[in-house]
Length: 317
Image 1: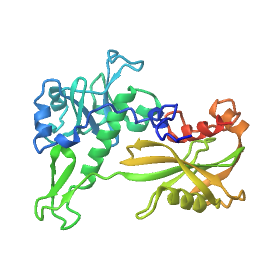
Image 2: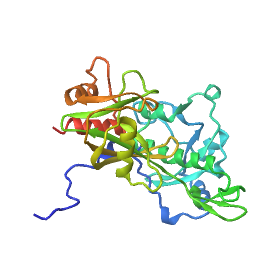
Image 3: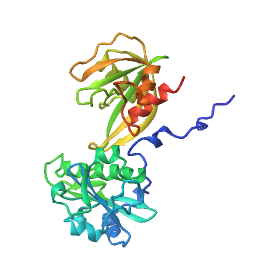
Image 4: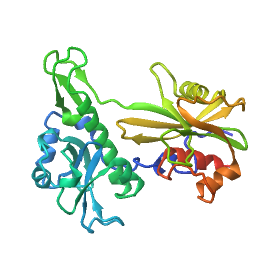
């Protein structure tokens, strides 16, 4: 029988994680130095206003979602709130017109009603906006964070200027071009037939266990990063590694790459600097954690890629 590579019957797992619902047409091949300016001149242009790891939301009850929060502002509204719309980055175009993101000073105590400045993680955890808006948030937040961190040329140290709608910076002195970065992070669930390995970071809420994770280093494959990070954090050596799903993660501009790893040993030697605890869990205990029937322990929320890795394994029997 001929193997058909694209005949998988189920939807892509990456469609169901938080921050992954972006439907914006990025129009990457059409970007020019005046593309953001042209987009701002369009009467249908909408802006995301962000600053300090938070986004401005309008809680006016007319947003068409359960929270009543709207995240898009007109150009005039953005200017009235002190946004320098000339420095906006162009995310692309959706069914309603151009979408941009711009930095703005957000002081939670000084905002008039119905505005609130909400941190990105709370927006995601509390489902304050729909999936497509959350995806746009991730794109805009990552781009704005990169610009904030790369205002000067890494080659000569002189100021750089934004170009092609925010997807490039060019040094004003030596003309070196700089492009937005994405930091790849491996997040992996080590498994056997009946057990999986979960750990607790020291910053986790009490009772939460999750998959292990770590940055992929230069010159390293995803598979080898999964094996290295798992061994460094737990002392478990892995055999086969398979990819499952990915998740944009705007803290500040990462891409979580979710994988499963086949455990070759079961004696754990945890890295107590990185982890507060690390241990094996059997399938029944994991299912109770996922379904919130465990008396004390739980997994990350459904929007997190770790949740999807854990659930995919737990329900695979």
